[in-house]
Image 1 (tube, rainbow over the protein chains, first blue to last red):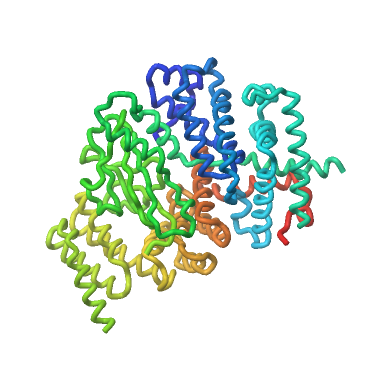
Image 2: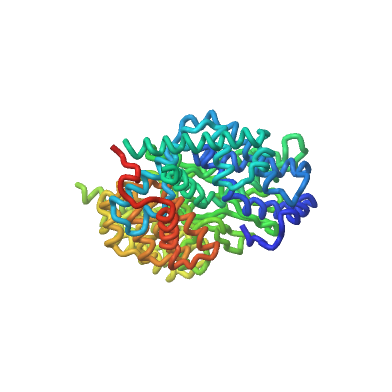
Amino acid sequence: MGIEKVESSDAELVRRVRAGDIGAYGVLVSRYRDRLGRYAIHMIGDREDAEEALQDSFVRAYRSLARCDDPARFGAWLYGILVNRCRTTGARAARRRRMFVRDPDALHGAAHADQSERLEWTDAVDRALARLAPQHREAFLLKHVEDLEYEEIAELTGAGVSALKMRVKRAREQLQRYLREAEHV
Amino acid sequence: MFEQEDDIVERMIQQLRRPVAVDPALDARVLQAITAPRPSQRSVWPWLAAAALLGALTIWRPWSRGSAADRPDTLQFVLVAPQANSVSLVGDFNDWDPKRSPMRTANGIWAAVVQLAPGRYRYAFLVNGVEWRADPGAPAARDDEFGTPSSVVTVGGKGS
Amino acid sequence: MILAVLLIAAQVAAQDPRLDRLDPDTRAQVRVVVDSARRIGLPAEPLIQRALEGATKGAPGPRIVTAVRRLSADLGTAHAALGDGASVPELEAGVAALRAGATPEVLAKLHSVRRPPLTMALSVLADLVASGVPADSAAVAVLALAPKARDADLVEFRRAVERDIALGAPPAAATSVRVNAGADVLNAASPPPGPALPRRP
């Protein structure tokens, strides 16, 4: 809604929100919506629940904006709120729905056999991810998909760096096994 | 051997890193939620609090209906128009009658909640009774044979 | 017997009180179009809505009549391509797709590869073109997805393409750029296709 001012920094926008400019918060939401959405969708595995968690997190962040100590690191702080919020949806995600197809290879005039292979791969990926224990999935996604440093992940999750490294290592081992299983069926 | 095994996980990571497009209407829903008056506050629009709560809960979810599909979907239409005195939602679902779906406002954010059976609907916002606006968050209707912009919303499912 | 029922139905449709919003001349002409459409099995409601849109927007009578006639003709084309079983939403979405540049052959092909309802697939095709994607690219993309994708997948695809365009991708290449980028990433990271790809039993 409207045109985003990409020149304004997060810190500048936070300052404006604190001064009463709600529209500035809209810009922040647009800025982080897709990136955080990606984490929520992979973590929770259900698009509806993920978007709900995402929306919830944005609202919570706004309401507790005064507690954001470093406005320049608004994004990281927002991540923390989202990571916590995604943990509470864990139980409901037990009724996993199949993730929709995002694979662009599925589209463009691809031969039919090729196309179904791509869809199967996406399915296999989603299923393997779903089989991980929540703690392992969380650590794996934050490290390898969201590209956070271990120190940052430690801040967000409250876990120690070495514990996190172990979780990521375990996650990789398990994923390898699940994916290999899927291809040998 | 080690490299080959790791390959498949790397492929998975590439797959997961692909950008995801979240419904852009989420922005408006967030703004709606944060500007809704809290129950503890005195408000001259008590019904708006209820409407805002309803708005925050009823989210456009065409995919959740799947094939069970004859049931109508509840949609919330939102327009940010701080300068407006009145905004009406008009479209194929209400006979293009400005009196049928007047929108309610809080802090310049106008909203209306509508139940729609499966189908494809053209619609637009009528601001102050005179100005036609399309919905910036929705696909544009290509045919504006009447010279004003419109938008389209499609609700999946069987329909009649 | 059936003809009598149809004629009665036509009469009822023509007396739709909503059309009273039109001036008498326009109203009469619109009724003729609506009645003719009904007689050949096309739905009246989209035509009435189009007339009401014109009325609300203060359009001149002749323009309203033209719009309603054009819609009736396009509904006929969509009906021919999609078959007798097509629902009203499917026909409306079919019209949108046709006006976006899809050929009747594309509609017929979609009908043959995808289980009904086709509403969302046709809508997505039209909406992609509205974002700037050339009609043939949009048709190729939707037809390729159509056999297996659910409605939600199609909506997601449309949003993803729109996002790419908003971020600066040339609309003419938006669907194929997504494809090529995806293909490159996959090819770079993976061993050659074959046993390495997971297969269903």
